[in-house]
Amino acid sequence: APRAQVIVTACWLTMKEVSLVIGELARRVDFDSDAAALDPEQLRDAGNRLLTTLLTLKHNGAIEKTLVGLTCLGERLLRSPDARLSAQPREWLETLFQRTLKQKQDVRDLIRRSAGIPFGFMAVFLAEPRGVPRTLLHEALEKLLNLAVRLRTDFDFDFSDFFFRLTMARPVL
Image (tube, rainbow, N blue to C red):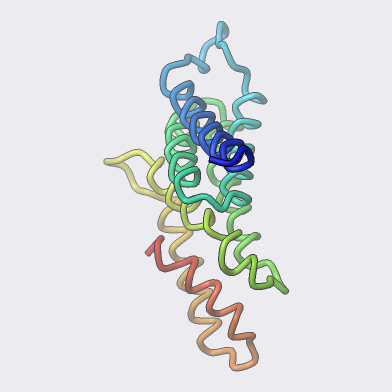
């Protein structure tokens, strides 16, 4: 293969592996004790980097592995007794909604750069513990449905914005 193609492939593979490593660290490393290997700020940074990765990548395989890493990290953060950490997945949802509602998005935003947005929503939803009320899921779905109703009744909207939001909601719903 041409050298450039090998480099690009190595970059995608690296992104996939880094995302999976962060997820595995979240599963195995103790961060709720005084002797924690990672401090809360490092965990917040890791989550924000994974979310940024989802919002910028265009490679489906890398996006799917980032979903796994973000879900694993989110699971641990939601179970954390530290309020700053357990609030992080809610902050991710706000970032995802801001990105979804961003005005004046162009074709690149609508097609490829938005590919990770539904995966970001799914990562947060999957991170919520089973057997307890899934508050983040319910709040986000209510917000998405209200947005859909608003767009449906507002006849002065840009069709490309409607299409974009529909594209975002389809995999999540």
